[in-house]
Length: 111
Length: 115
Image (cartoon, rainbow over all chains, first blue to last red):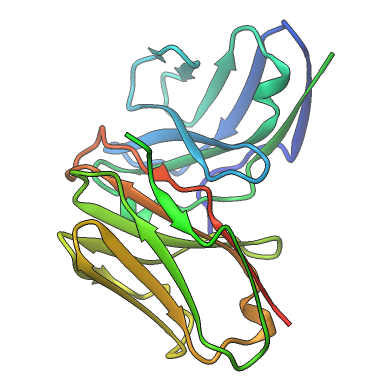
């Protein structure tokens, strides 16, 4: 079973920030938080990952709470093309083979 | 790079037939993964390879499923005989060398329908 909890679905207005929460209260000290997304009819796509510090790349920002029990993925200016299922996953470094994809959050970006 | 390439994109077959799915990983990637996705069970890892050697096949549902990686640029997932419950989207993914900062790169998947 997935070790994370995410809302089933969320809506966001185009051009606004999308904030996707994830709870991972049982995360271990050496486990990373990974985010992937899956656009309809495509394979999952890596977005970002982090351990303790907040991270930012060209796609998104990742905010991890100080106790590491939860995190938020931020898409600063959501577009219609960001409509997808977003997966929050925890795993140890080098655990590509053990990443468990849960149900994720279905994000719908609306005009 | 063209990314991970899977073929066919769609496959429709009848129960009992043999099905072969193909995958070409990204050049230089040492790891290759096969996943299956259904509405009921989500995305499941079936098997993964490192340098063409199968490392973990515990996710392979049963003996009807087999996977091979004869060289660094090609892998197959075979189902023989196929059953309607095998209908799903099968994804292949590849990854560079092991490490915390490595990502999975997925192909576009093969939509399998077993009638």
